[in-house]
Image (cartoon, rainbow over all chains, first blue to last red; front, side, top):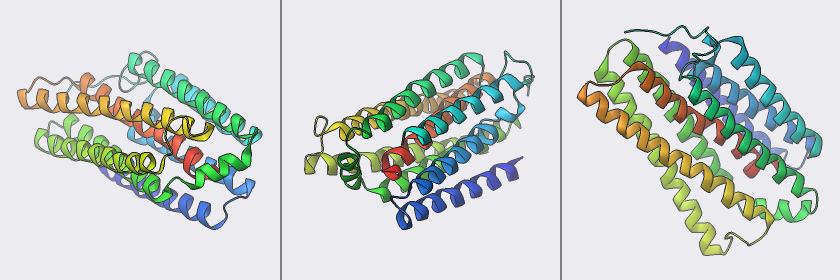
Amino acid sequence: MKNKYTITYLVLLVLTSTTAVFSNIFSGLKAISILILILSALKFLLVAFNFMELKKAHLFWKVLLLIYLSVFVGVISVIF
Amino acid sequence: MKTTNYKNMYYPPGGILMWILIFLELFTFGIAIIVLVASSKENLEAFKTSATHLNTTYGAINTLFLLTSGFFMATSLHFFKRNNLKKAKLYLNLTILGGILFLFLKSVEYHEKIALGYVLGYDTFFNFYWLLTAFHVIHVLVGLVILTSLKKSIKKGKTLLEDFEASAAFWHMCDLIWLLLFPVLYLLF
């Protein structure tokens, strides 16, 4: 269990570094902006499902969070 | 230690009331961030120029502080569930330290922005920056009060698992909100 948290944490660090590198090297490209949003959404899900243990929760809560995140990323990607 | 059946819809980890609060907060910040991005369409160049005044390195380091703090929080809860109170307290202290470091760096960033004149009212981008980040800082402050209170109750041996889980969920919510704010404010434009 503790190992699961460590792996999640390491993945979060890699995703954060990747996001920072992408934004510095390819700034201004819309595709990169959307990629940054998707990577951030992935980090969001890792925290919610692994650190907050939402993956043990009833399907309702998981689906609600996924819908929220999809709408958030989708709307921003469309209007940006 | 007594455990909860999380598969029951009314008992998500942290409690149903905490999750209702979390979703309300996520909706509030989500709508505000969408309005920020929509507002940028009116004058994208001005938003891009203002965004360059933000220090991405500060934002990235603060992300690391909160993610590390979240990792310690999850680990602390893990040890609490196994009745290892000594390690639970140790990791809880580290969680609090992560939050304090976040606030310290945020204060440095705020100080620099104020010194340069990028205050509330400077332009639309900075209005959103101040309102969104300050509202988030208030959440972190409340989270630190909750965690400090939790630490005291552990010392007295009066902590219930439900209380620990709810406190942890609130702290992770601060992570979640920051993970939405950081890319949009610091990286998107």
